[in-house]
Length: 524
Image (cartoon, rainbow, N blue to C red; front, side, top):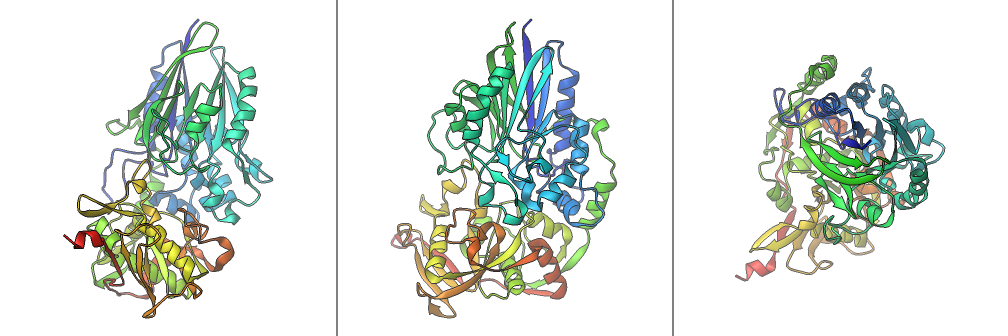
């Protein structure tokens, strides 16, 4: 008889379990794994007799929130807290995201300990692979229907991740992997589903490229070059998408449990897919099923930890009131991070990014909450020895962040769509520099001085940055691991905490070493 498959998915939850963004102790935001899990549980409970319900956790689960920072970095915490919750929800399979690797392979193993579903990883191979994944795919038989789920992870991970965190692993092409395995799965199963922690590199309707072609996001190419796929789950880009590509339904359910992706496949009597649709199920107004609630002890401990005082700030205001202005002129909050990195590494040049527009900066009395909420990545600090020419190239890369529109200097759409990439623009301390956005890219850096003198191409500089930038992340190809002089073992948030405790009160200053202008506007 005909059947219907409902394929549910979450992706990029980033450790947001409860409906809070942790900005305050009492914050309520309509997000979180518990709300998403409630939708999954209710869908199972309300399923018709001819409906098959499957749920996939599509990666980037264990990193990205104050909760995950607490679990990973504090002693005697339950590292497997999140997979305890996902197992209670009842996922059928999981996939590794790129941020799973931020804490290394041993931490992935510890974090996965409570799961009761397989981790699928077809394109990651190597000696350590079996430590963190169970199989390349899984074939589930329900109501007589054989359903294959193939797990894939963006192959771009080595371009971001520190080598020691992925030692013994090889990230192979998802396209070549799918081309090899999908035909085999078609022979073994009635339905073939791909769960891919990666996104779309082209407009799903027109096929027009939306970003530079790399192996980071290959979902569009996957569905247009690999026949035999019945449904595709995507993620990584934090976009809210549901549609079809090449007649194949796909979803991407946003971030932090804001949506559950749902793909519905209709099968005929012979279990062939005859129709497929997709949509997103918003979680904001869902009342959490109390049976999914974990022991509140961990969340209570996190909230108490976040309330701990760190230090005080005087003179300049470290709160970020206008994110664009902070990027156009620099900001005391960014100058603080640079100062922390410079002191930790013994340099006098440093760069850092205002990662997103949720960053609020630091109040006069700084708490752990503010540090962890503002700097949510477990980055470490690196210093690299580079030439003046390479540093100028990095500054030119930064100039691409801005453009002139309607008589105003604004952020280039390339950094806003299809995925927000605000973290790929840096503010530097220790140099005096100026951009003229009216000039062509490659000629926009109109001032670049160090210790009051213009920097020459062959001049040697030692620059501090985070590990993501140090390996060339964000298309900063002038930075690379072979240029590293030193790195910290402590994460940058922990370095910030130590610095503020050691320099209490911290006397903040307004940076005045940077200017962005557009000469064409000055003529009017």
